[in-house]
Image 1: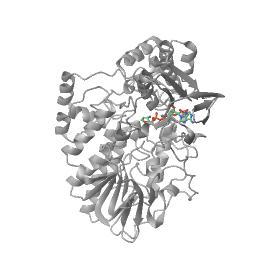
Image 2: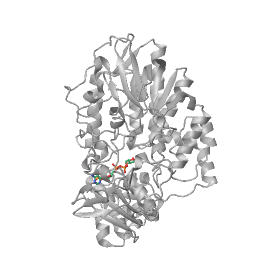
Image 3: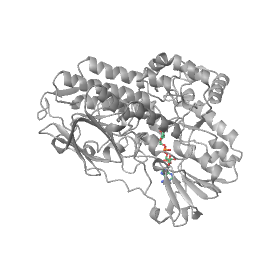
Image 4: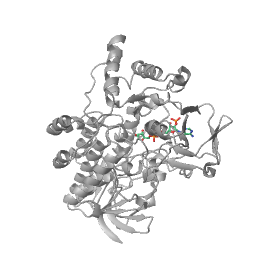
Length: 557
Ligand code: NA7
């Protein structure tokens, strides 16, 4: 068996930086990546229109000042190919590629109580032994297709946006169906509409979306940002969402109707999600405040979509603005003014089945040449539970999480010593600029490993009480907001049978970082450290009685 200090699973933003840090600190490390190249999310999501909804100069590593200065971003919001190029550049520049085995998927991660080491097994049958396992598996990497009757019978081409072919797909002249109008559908629909003969959009829930106002970056702007990068990065670290948007100071209800509307309009013209979400302090906590911005976006949709009946169908009415992930688009609502686009509302008449010829809903069969499933992911827990993870005493992660994820700070799970989860459930993760949160976790984990080495400690894992308290805090924080008032993937509501638990931490990256730093300053408060692998200072048990694991999710095509 190959032996390493650490195995890092995944070679996206998180895995690459983690490998870099481990090597710099003198740990032997092996990366395992299912794709044939680096990139993670940005390797798999090659669908037309795929673009990050965080600005490029924010959505980039800060760990290397040289890298920051060398790399030239071309657009305000980076498209998938540009981010993939960036991550390839990083892999080459820091010589990370030789540390990674590509085309190998980790199937199991099993702890040996006797030796205190983990055995990591891949689908190719390779076995690795490591003291530490670091899951850099991403939050949105297990794509999901609902179990539509007849799914396999479709004669045309089927694509999930999160598993897009390497080569561009040509939809010219085709009758194409897109299922799903989340962030992904909203990005793909305008692009596919430009190519397809006819596009049918199957929408169950309309979404709030704000314009990106994407544009090329000027040399002057880049130079300015590069000169002030340090100051800017420090601001992002203590912010709410991990980017430079100025934090609001006023309640939406402090302004007159006219002033508030003008403020929303000003921000709408500038474009992007943070500016809208950061307009006022209470948009995500006070329903009256939220109504003001929801009404503004609804008015914009009605203004943009020429057919009033169609506009109503595209207007979200029954959940708060921002409670499902706010979408950022390029001419999404405008696309419905095209003659070759039809909205099929499947809220009241759900998709009944997929036939060899197309999709049936409301008794009508829509004949299609291709179906694009923009149907989302088994978010946050899915990537970890897609592997067989067994900790102390053979306890499975699936059992430990049968009532929802339980992790301390989103970094570690009681009973799973020396296993770390980058941007795991209970951390700001998907509610933040992922790169900022990833760098913070990687730095924290790396420093923890150095601490263990310096003090001759074999294992680290959370104390059950500390984990319970953190999970309760994450839930209580979410309950104080409007985030829990929508059926979203943040809550696991998109996966049949998944426990409804609000998974990310809503408290913002600044306060979360402070908490993580305090934990370290207080001697890794809440963590149990042991000099010997076989006997932890206190047995770690799952904090709730084990329940039967939920049924496996339907197999995706
Ligand atoms: P999302 O946001 O989970 O969106 C999935 C979409 O698929 C959403 O509109 C769903 O409608 C729709 N859906 C799912 N199942 C069905 C069925 N059975 N029938 C009709 N429509 C269905 O995934 P995305 O990929 O768009 O975005 C994920 C994240 O990736 C995104 O937020 C960014 O962070 C990047 P629903 O709303 O459930 O009614």
